Length: 362
Image 1 (cartoon, rainbow, N blue to C red):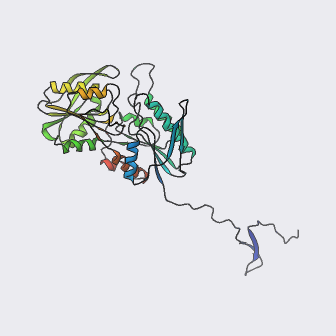
Image 2: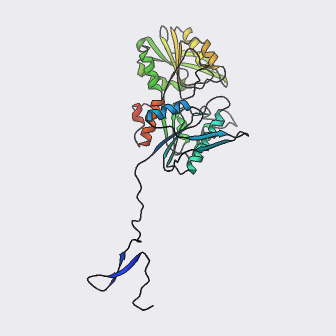
């Protein structure tokens, strides 16, 4: 090699400039371009459903104007769950809808959700959003005696460990559940929908009273009462054991009024049925009840069927079969609210604006 020769990459050749004899690199077709590769700025929203509430998921997808995503979920002979997304989800904002419910299936559906999350994570999605309208184990949010778990926090830890970026839930049992997460939790409420239903029936104003079944739900009941322009009453109760409630007193004037009890969930319906009878005993002309989550475990259906309540209004956060539900029950759909929330989360817009800032009930 002579002194005038220089080693250069194949991507360039040397050529003299017009000003002097210096050798300057001149790019050829093999030269590297920009230091970053441009990509499309468009985001993709995809919605997939677990097995817990397919009807609600289809309603959400329809209101979003998209097709519910294809996912294969099946069970092996030994009971293990298998999940596979049957289309590409790489780079998408994925919303997984799962609302675990039902005796003997909650744990299976929770495991199913965790496997879906892991499958989505390994498929290189952009963000994983879990839409869990009914948050399981919500009542196990604190220790009331020694050697007890705080299972609601455990569920939060499991979701985060699996790789969730955001959780969307509705009418949580207590506000402290949001503090169990280190990721964003969007809280929605069905109170406006239920309040509008009773207003349309003419059950509002001075002739009605909204009743909270316990002191913990007083703030939710107050917001409901404000929307239907009614007064407020509160029941006090004791729980001698799990799923057993005894009403001890009624705080407020219910005499000569239509009473509307509101709660976040109906499990075995013991609280509602005992409360309804206490309200009638204190002079209420009739009793209605409403709750966001129709868990309806054990004797709930029969209790509501035989109760003194005129009507029980719930939403479809939890799948309520057409057959077997109480004759005096009405199911309202919250698919529209969930679709609006998903759209705003995807577009990085406010969720509180959907509810006029009244989605914090605690």
